[in-house]
View 1 (cartoon, rainbow over the protein chains, first blue to last red):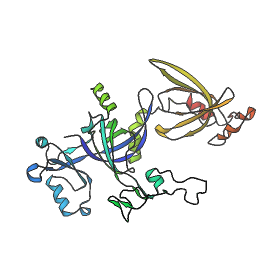
View 2 (cartoon, chains in turn purple, blue; view 1 turned 120 degrees about the vertical axis):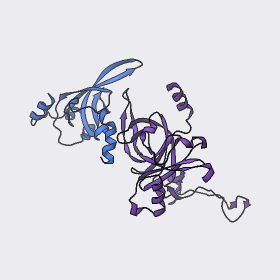
View 3 (cartoon, rainbow over the protein chains, first blue to last red; view 1 turned 90 degrees about the vertical axis):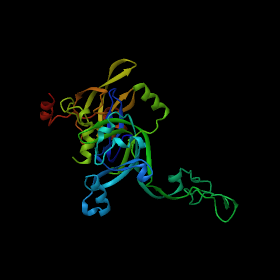
View 4 (cartoon, rainbow over the protein chains, first blue to last red; view 1 turned 60 degrees about the horizontal axis):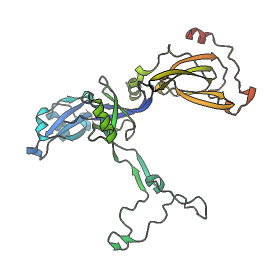
Length: 228
Length: 129
């Protein structure tokens, strides 16, 4: 199974490398998670491991979920997430096994998935990096407007509506965002902390899903090869 | 531990201890020994100036040091806990009555100087020595 856990974003700080360079880092508290279900190709049509994270008070949970977690001999969990694995690997896992940050011990790069901060209803300048109109030359109270959105023409040709997917004002943020191939800077097994270089989507205390990097970019592939 | 304490705990072992750092405040003139790495060689450059601002805490503690080079003001911001700062020496204790001395930027000539701290140094000197 690729190393993967659920966790929470705690906050950011500064980390000094050996040569004195300082880098921005995000501290994540990942795990402990519990394997709550094994999905098998026979029963479910695909192979996956389901992990649960964080306690939920029983009276806040629902009977189906309490029963589900009880099967794995564990207390009710508030978050569940599936990790796809190869069917042949399923035997390696067992109900109720606890996973903590040590699964990332030998991992150099991780992907972090979180829910980005919501920005509310935003105009095109902030949302799509439009330039807006000019500051002068006769522009009247339309300095941040998108300008022309083209004539009425549907995807099929002319028509009563404008083309679908036209970038306009609207709700921005609060989307699921994956940040790929973040460097793992440090691991604190005592407190289940994972320190990664760079920024992670979402607010402090936000839920994040951390997994071993699926695919590295060219530079990091080279570095990983040189390091191993 | 709460979240903030956990975040700070990850870098706590990187911070310089109280005894490594001299007791410095805004207004002091200091010598900053900066380690400069050129290829595989390393040398130390001394940067002398007045601390005009201190901000942040923990690993984020920063000092802004202002000096005059060739009649031109130069300000450098150092992370206090950076390993690139090998040493900080206090040259002169200044008497600053505010936390940020940005007004020095507009000063020219003699008015650029800061009055020496004369009083209240007993406990500072005893703790740093």
